[in-house]
Image (tube, rainbow, N blue to C red; front, side):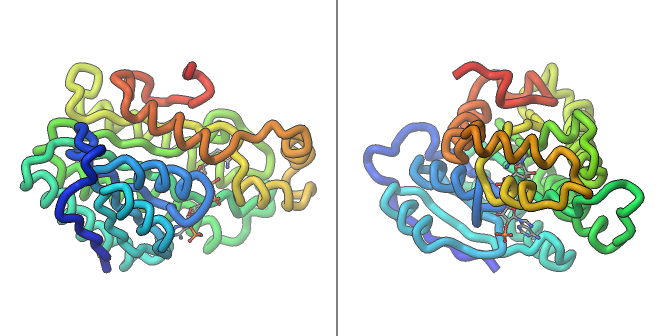
Length: 275
Ligand SMILES: NC(=O)c1ccc[n+]([C@@H]2O[C@H](COP(=O)([O-])OP(=O)(O)OC[C@H]3O[C@@H](n4cnc5c(N)ncnc54)[C@H](OP(=O)(O)O)[C@@H]3O)[C@@H](O)[C@H]2O)c1
């Protein structure tokens, strides 16, 4: 069920074109998604958070900033909830376009890194299916509904939060690598279907965010080295303060999303951009 916090008018200092923008963002409870949500909530326009719980501080920030905020409850593991959310998100998108706005952004950020295990130990079919459901099946399903609902949008941008894991094999990450590689290839298919190279109405990019200091990294550091031989490398990066903050990463991702270059590199990496 969606909770809408409607605002009769935007704050006077938020009258730029972002007020015509609808941004749909998944996985806003923690980490990178929470950081992107906070920045988007302070920018005006209409933010739709799609997550297992809503955030009262985020609602307050949005209200203070003149940003319309809608929360759509979803558990990406629950097929019925995903189907209901798709209908709600499509309706919100259609309403946004019917009101004369033209810009829609979709950011598929929610993700899981587990199950972490060597290939011969990936014997929990349920856990494997759950990872695929969250990381790739649900984004494909939600995007299908949004592509249809946003068929009249002049500017539709879809950002898939991928990972270097989708591009480089990592022992113990058979499932995670496979889901992120799938995300990359799926982005290429959307671009191919949409003719994104010649028609910029629909743009898509699958972007690796770098190594970000979130709960996911804590999970990685806490994994069993027998299941994940590269664990010490991630522990060293943490010890050496080489992780990037979610806030800085969010700022860079949103900058790329808004740039004219967005989608030029379908399989993208935030570390390849200069800021
Ligand atoms: N951190 C990194 O170094 C790194 C590197 C490369 C790529 N990434 C990618 O960046 C994205 C964000 O990662 P993060 O580091 O911010 O991870 P995180 O701190 O673990 O947060 C994951 C987010 O996904 C949500 N999520 C997970 N399962 C869900 C479900 N079943 N239904 C709804 N929401 C669900 C979580 O919500 P709940 O709180 O409800 O669980 C949370 O909001 C992921 O796609 C990840 O693969 C991260």
